[in-house]
Image 1: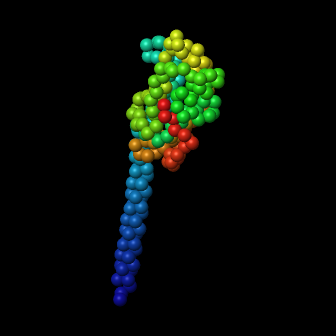
Image 2 (image 1 turned 180 degrees about the vertical axis):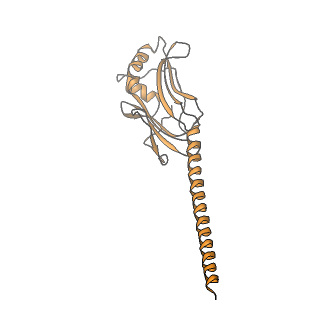
Image 3 (image 1 turned 90 degrees about the horizontal axis):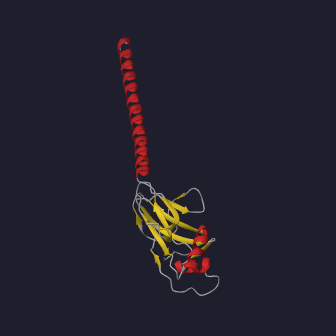
Length: 196
């Protein structure tokens, strides 16, 4: 074999190896960009449907009449599926509205019959800006003393709930804390669920 032919073969091999290395580098860069873009798109989608549950209380209805209400509202962008929901008074879990009124407002005496409107939050779906008033208690001459007591004590009412987005990303709402906590999934059971 002549020296020129050997040099030509070496030169051609070097060009083929360089081309192969470039192709691998371009493929790796394309894969990295695709993975990165996919992660950014997932974050964008997640942010665009992020639900945020908030707890609130009021002592006036929408017309300005005396009515104590406890509510949970979805202040986020996407739907929230409530997996569990607890109502606490002074840190103790309440099973229902009557137990809450007895704990906060009875002073030990038996509660009279009162017109209290309740709704269940457990296992509900709240769309963006939707709210559930899970307790409504209008002031009447018959229940005025209990209404005043609950109005004073409602600041001691808090909620603990777990909810998930449409992508099954989940958060814990604890109204005694400033920030909600991201969780891998909602607990299978909690100590008790408020039944309204």
